[in-house]
Amino acid sequence: MEKIGFIGLGIMGKPMAKNLIKAGYELAVYDVVGESVAEVAQCGARAAASIEDAVNGAEVVITMLPNSPQVKTVMLEEGGVLGCAKAGTIVVDMSSISPIASQEVAAACEKKGVKFLDAPVSGGEPKAVAGTLAIMVGGDADAFATVEDILLKMGSSAVLVGDVGSGNVTKLANQIIVALNIAAMSEAMVLAKKSGVDPEKVYQAIRGGLAGSTVLDAKMPMVLEGNFNPGFRIELHIKDLQNALDCAHSVNSPIPLTAEVMEIMQGLKVAGMHTNDHDAIIRHYERLAGVEVRR
Ligand code: NAD
Image (cartoon, rainbow, N blue to C red):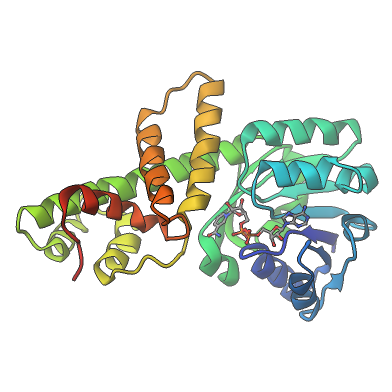
């Protein structure tokens, strides 16, 4: 079994690392937050004192960091992964970052004989804990085949989508579809309320038809309860939509609806709701129409 260095033990990284330990892999774990390292070490990992310490002796290095700048720091800067990884190491970056950044990091890896896969995930903390994430991968098919078993200890599916960057393009597609679904749900349900029709009955009436969706079933019950606790924070979704806009502009593929929802989220951020769940998009529509969609 491969030895794994795991860097980034936040909301997602911690349970993912713990699932690998449970599956019998030998892990060395590192995060800038010492308590997180100690917590995962208690489950059977070796607590690494630095990135170098986590990477030394590892055949596979997994990173789960906030965004492109952190991935570039951890991979490329002095004391980073590429300074100490031996040729043949496979780096799997599972963070949701810009596909352009993934390609830049992959190019630097190639110069050192290190293989790089971008492998972001969907499913949030509950699925990270359950080991049932959906994993979307970009990169070399042989490297993917080598790490597939590892990925399937953290997720219930791992699909190789294409070359490096494809994993993050897929994740951006996922995030666009989710954001626009929540906005459409919000627009429709505020209209129902303003028209004097019970939004809960509207939800029950349409959820089995073409407008039904996983997003509707996840978010509408939360809205009816007035539950805006994350889940997935507005500020993280803003990060993903910014990456989507940057990527779209770089390939000349306009995404006007995404831009509109991005500005709605920016308004919510200004109003202090950046740490709300993204179901708070409905609060924007509620303020416009002067109603609340609650049970
Ligand atoms: P998080 O902020 O909880 O965790 C990130 C971790 O990286 C933190 O523990 C932080 O200390 C660590 N870190 C930052 N810089 C570092 C450095 N230089 N060296 C070592 N460690 C460093 O974020 P998260 O919620 O775990 O998300 C991680 C990624 O997964 C993000 O890209 C996010 O968009 C994506 N994601 C999150 C969710 C979710 O529901 N939270 C769902 C799917 C995907």
